[in-house]
Length: 335
Image 1: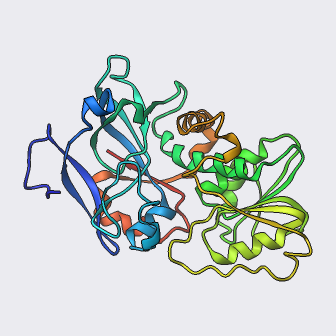
Image 2 (image 1 turned 90 degrees about the horizontal axis):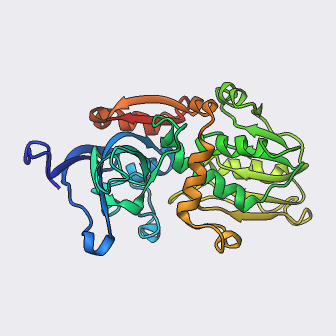
Image 3 (image 1 turned 135 degrees about the horizontal axis):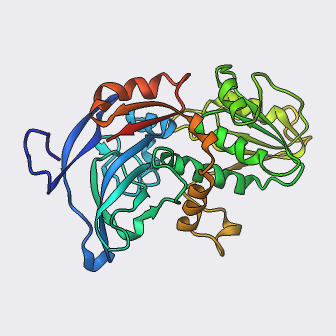
């Protein structure tokens, strides 16, 4: 890992965002090393166009709140360094292939790669965008994958009454997908009333307070322990609550008294790192990502991208992006 002034050769060196301490980060030069062709097959070089900041997870990384017990599980596909820092972390990059197999050169692709202006990966690690998906919107692919996996865990059915608690990017995508199932009644819930406008632009019914406890399925995605209590209170008899929030090292009291046992509720975890077991015989990660990209072709989803900055501005912008989230959904980085 070298600083910008040390190695000027742009053919062998890339520039990447590194978390270097608690609430601190820098753009540092890092060798443009690639996987060996003999071991990994064909290799592509990608020039980044955009990347997306995943506020929930990246905030935990930025502030050093990844539990030691989860250091291995939390590693991103092409992460460098180790938690807590220095670490190069991120997983939502869209770019153009500039070197590689003839069929891929010139294609715009998505890759689970950190914030870096140029990188080399196995050709199998990139997915070509659908023709009708703008590169600017494709940064939502990782979030859409998470939403798809959450709904696979919840297994909603035609006509279900569904509540989604917490309207960050993932919560809004979950609610939007669920609302497209025929006959469903979907309620999008967040204490931040500024989420109303974006929810309604997605065709969702918004509430800032709890409603009836008659829901067949409740999905919690707020990232706040209090939201779990709200989610449990919304569940009807024999209902399922899917917990999609990841809290890092934050203690979370689970209010399992009151109606939890009399209603025979099911509290179920969901994590995008593993595909729902019942789908493993037919689905893999590549197919799931391809599905996520297809689902992003609706231009209404542009409303989820609420901010933008230049890559070079990350050292002075990242703290603001990750801390003040009331107005921020997905933040796009432009290269």
